[in-house]
Image (cartoon, rainbow, N blue to C red; front, side):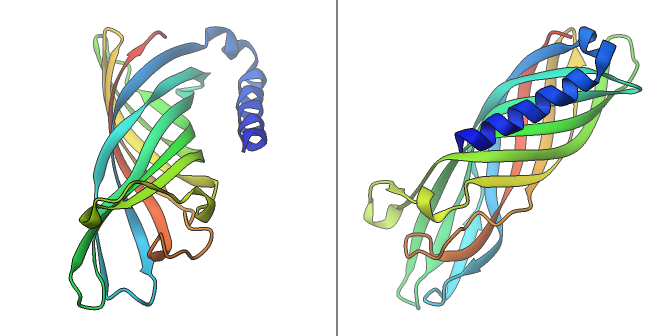
Length: 213
Protein backbone atom coordinates (compact mmCIF):
# COMPACT_ATOMS: atom_id res chain seq x y z
CA UNK A 1 0.00 0.00 0.00
CA UNK A 2 2.81 2.39 0.82
CA UNK A 3 4.32 1.78 -2.61
CA UNK A 4 1.01 2.59 -4.33
CA UNK A 5 0.63 5.75 -2.24
CA UNK A 6 4.18 6.82 -3.11
CA UNK A 7 3.54 6.29 -6.83
CA UNK A 8 0.40 8.43 -6.61
CA UNK A 9 2.28 11.27 -4.94
CA UNK A 10 5.10 11.09 -7.52
CA UNK A 11 2.58 11.30 -10.36
CA UNK A 12 0.89 14.29 -8.74
CA UNK A 13 4.27 16.01 -8.32
CA UNK A 14 5.08 15.29 -11.96
CA UNK A 15 1.91 17.06 -13.09
CA UNK A 16 2.94 20.11 -11.07
CA UNK A 17 6.46 20.13 -12.49
CA UNK A 18 5.17 19.88 -16.06
CA UNK A 19 3.16 23.04 -15.49
CA UNK A 20 6.41 24.97 -15.88
CA UNK A 21 6.25 28.66 -14.91
CA UNK A 22 2.72 28.25 -13.55
CA UNK A 23 4.18 26.23 -10.69
CA UNK A 24 5.74 29.42 -9.37
CA UNK A 25 2.21 30.71 -8.69
CA UNK A 26 1.22 27.61 -6.77
CA UNK A 27 -1.04 28.15 -3.77
CA UNK A 28 -2.32 25.89 -1.04
CA UNK A 29 -5.03 25.54 1.57
CA UNK A 30 -6.46 23.39 4.32
CA UNK A 31 -10.00 22.11 4.77
CA UNK A 32 -12.12 19.91 7.00
CA UNK A 33 -15.70 18.84 7.46
CA UNK A 34 -18.10 15.91 7.36
CA UNK A 35 -18.67 12.97 5.04
CA UNK A 36 -22.19 11.59 4.67
CA UNK A 37 -21.35 8.17 3.31
CA UNK A 38 -23.28 5.07 2.32
CA UNK A 39 -22.96 2.04 0.06
CA UNK A 40 -24.53 1.70 -3.38
CA UNK A 41 -24.90 -1.17 -5.90
CA UNK A 42 -25.07 -3.65 -3.01
CA UNK A 43 -25.40 -7.38 -3.67
CA UNK A 44 -26.11 -9.47 -0.56
CA UNK A 45 -25.09 -13.02 0.22
CA UNK A 46 -27.71 -15.77 -0.22
CA UNK A 47 -28.52 -16.15 3.49
CA UNK A 48 -30.01 -12.65 3.71
CA UNK A 49 -33.58 -11.78 2.79
CA UNK A 50 -33.09 -8.04 2.76
CA UNK A 51 -30.40 -5.47 3.47
CA UNK A 52 -31.40 -1.88 4.20
CA UNK A 53 -28.75 0.82 4.06
CA UNK A 54 -28.50 4.41 5.26
CA UNK A 55 -25.83 7.07 5.40
CA UNK A 56 -23.47 7.73 8.30
CA UNK A 57 -21.51 10.87 9.07
CA UNK A 58 -17.79 11.02 9.84
CA UNK A 59 -14.74 13.25 9.48
CA UNK A 60 -12.96 14.32 6.32
CA UNK A 61 -10.08 16.80 6.13
CA UNK A 62 -6.67 17.57 4.75
CA UNK A 63 -4.75 19.96 2.54
CA UNK A 64 -4.42 20.84 -1.12
CA UNK A 65 -2.22 22.58 -3.66
CA UNK A 66 -3.39 24.39 -6.78
CA UNK A 67 -1.92 26.39 -9.64
CA UNK A 68 -3.21 28.22 -12.74
CA UNK A 69 -4.03 26.19 -15.82
CA UNK A 70 -5.42 28.55 -18.44
CA UNK A 71 -8.89 29.69 -17.37
CA UNK A 72 -8.95 26.99 -14.70
CA UNK A 73 -6.90 25.82 -11.74
CA UNK A 74 -5.58 22.32 -11.19
CA UNK A 75 -6.16 21.32 -7.58
CA UNK A 76 -4.59 18.24 -6.01
CA UNK A 77 -5.76 17.25 -2.54
CA UNK A 78 -4.62 14.88 0.18
CA UNK A 79 -7.49 13.94 2.47
CA UNK A 80 -8.03 11.75 5.52
CA UNK A 81 -11.51 10.48 4.72
CA UNK A 82 -13.73 8.20 6.81
CA UNK A 83 -16.52 6.49 4.91
CA UNK A 84 -18.63 3.35 5.25
CA UNK A 85 -22.29 2.85 5.85
CA UNK A 86 -25.00 1.73 8.26
CA UNK A 87 -28.41 0.08 8.20
CA UNK A 88 -30.09 -3.17 9.11
CA UNK A 89 -30.71 -6.56 7.61
CA UNK A 90 -33.50 -9.11 7.91
CA UNK A 91 -32.01 -12.58 8.32
CA UNK A 92 -34.46 -15.13 6.89
CA UNK A 93 -37.39 -13.59 8.71
CA UNK A 94 -35.77 -14.02 12.12
CA UNK A 95 -35.78 -10.30 12.82
CA UNK A 96 -33.78 -7.23 11.97
CA UNK A 97 -30.22 -6.53 13.06
CA UNK A 98 -28.56 -3.09 12.74
CA UNK A 99 -25.02 -2.93 11.40
CA UNK A 100 -22.35 -0.28 10.85
CA UNK A 101 -19.19 -0.28 8.76
CA UNK A 102 -16.32 2.19 9.13
CA UNK A 103 -13.75 2.59 6.35
CA UNK A 104 -10.76 4.94 6.66
CA UNK A 105 -9.01 6.12 3.49
CA UNK A 106 -6.17 8.38 2.43
CA UNK A 107 -7.78 9.96 -0.62
CA UNK A 108 -6.16 11.96 -3.43
CA UNK A 109 -8.64 13.90 -5.60
CA UNK A 110 -7.29 15.58 -8.75
CA UNK A 111 -9.69 18.36 -9.73
CA UNK A 112 -10.12 20.92 -12.48
CA UNK A 113 -11.52 24.03 -10.80
CA UNK A 114 -13.16 27.13 -12.25
CA UNK A 115 -13.33 30.24 -10.07
CA UNK A 116 -15.76 32.93 -11.22
CA UNK A 117 -13.95 36.28 -11.69
CA UNK A 118 -15.90 38.26 -9.10
CA UNK A 119 -14.39 40.79 -6.72
CA UNK A 120 -15.21 39.68 -3.17
CA UNK A 121 -17.57 36.69 -2.98
CA UNK A 122 -16.13 34.13 -5.41
CA UNK A 123 -18.20 31.09 -6.43
CA UNK A 124 -16.38 28.09 -7.88
CA UNK A 125 -17.13 24.78 -9.56
CA UNK A 126 -14.92 21.73 -9.96
CA UNK A 127 -14.84 18.17 -11.19
CA UNK A 128 -12.36 15.36 -11.59
CA UNK A 129 -11.36 11.99 -10.24
CA UNK A 130 -9.96 10.53 -7.05
CA UNK A 131 -7.98 7.55 -5.89
CA UNK A 132 -8.22 6.33 -2.30
CA UNK A 133 -6.09 3.91 -0.30
CA UNK A 134 -7.72 1.90 2.47
CA UNK A 135 -6.00 2.29 5.85
CA UNK A 136 -8.52 0.69 8.24
CA UNK A 137 -11.83 -1.17 7.92
CA UNK A 138 -14.13 -2.34 10.70
CA UNK A 139 -17.68 -3.56 11.13
CA UNK A 140 -19.96 -4.27 14.07
CA UNK A 141 -23.41 -5.70 14.75
CA UNK A 142 -25.11 -3.30 17.14
CA UNK A 143 -27.85 -5.78 18.10
CA UNK A 144 -25.51 -7.87 20.22
CA UNK A 145 -23.35 -4.86 21.17
CA UNK A 146 -20.31 -6.57 19.70
CA UNK A 147 -16.87 -5.06 19.41
CA UNK A 148 -15.60 -3.77 16.10
CA UNK A 149 -14.42 -6.58 13.79
CA UNK A 150 -11.48 -5.99 11.46
CA UNK A 151 -12.56 -6.62 7.84
CA UNK A 152 -9.68 -4.94 6.02
CA UNK A 153 -8.40 -8.23 4.57
CA UNK A 154 -11.80 -8.77 2.91
CA UNK A 155 -11.81 -5.42 1.10
CA UNK A 156 -9.95 -3.99 -1.85
CA UNK A 157 -7.05 -1.78 -0.80
CA UNK A 158 -7.73 0.83 -3.51
CA UNK A 159 -10.86 2.71 -4.50
CA UNK A 160 -11.38 5.25 -7.25
CA UNK A 161 -14.23 7.51 -8.19
CA UNK A 162 -15.63 10.62 -9.86
CA UNK A 163 -15.91 13.95 -8.02
CA UNK A 164 -18.12 17.01 -8.65
CA UNK A 165 -18.57 19.97 -6.36
CA UNK A 166 -19.21 23.67 -5.86
CA UNK A 167 -18.56 26.32 -3.27
CA UNK A 168 -17.81 29.91 -2.42
CA UNK A 169 -14.74 31.77 -1.18
CA UNK A 170 -14.83 34.98 0.83
CA UNK A 171 -11.61 36.64 2.01
CA UNK A 172 -9.77 33.32 1.94
CA UNK A 173 -12.49 31.37 3.77
CA UNK A 174 -14.07 28.62 1.69
CA UNK A 175 -17.29 26.64 2.04
CA UNK A 176 -18.01 23.79 -0.35
CA UNK A 177 -20.08 20.72 -1.00
CA UNK A 178 -19.13 17.75 -3.16
CA UNK A 179 -20.28 14.34 -4.28
CA UNK A 180 -17.88 11.43 -4.80
CA UNK A 181 -19.21 8.41 -6.67
CA UNK A 182 -17.12 5.30 -6.13
CA UNK A 183 -16.53 3.26 -9.28
CA UNK A 184 -14.74 0.26 -7.76
CA UNK A 185 -16.19 -2.64 -5.80
CA UNK A 186 -14.98 -2.34 -2.21
CA UNK A 187 -15.33 -6.10 -1.59
CA UNK A 188 -12.34 -8.25 -2.46
CA UNK A 189 -13.59 -11.63 -1.23
CA UNK A 190 -16.78 -13.10 0.21
CA UNK A 191 -16.87 -13.19 4.00
CA UNK A 192 -19.48 -13.97 6.64
CA UNK A 193 -18.45 -10.81 8.43
CA UNK A 194 -19.47 -8.66 5.46
CA UNK A 195 -22.94 -10.02 4.52
CA UNK A 196 -22.39 -8.63 1.01
CA UNK A 197 -20.72 -9.76 -2.21
CA UNK A 198 -20.46 -6.28 -3.72
CA UNK A 199 -20.72 -2.66 -2.55
CA UNK A 200 -19.49 0.72 -3.76
CA UNK A 201 -18.82 3.91 -1.83
CA UNK A 202 -21.13 6.89 -2.34
CA UNK A 203 -20.25 10.05 -0.40
CA UNK A 204 -21.58 13.57 0.05
CA UNK A 205 -19.16 15.95 1.77
CA UNK A 206 -19.45 19.41 3.30
CA UNK A 207 -16.17 21.20 4.11
CA UNK A 208 -14.89 24.58 5.24
CA UNK A 209 -11.33 25.73 4.73
CA UNK A 210 -8.73 28.43 4.44
CA UNK A 211 -7.37 29.26 0.98
CA UNK A 212 -3.87 30.78 0.96
CA UNK A 213 -3.71 31.39 -2.81
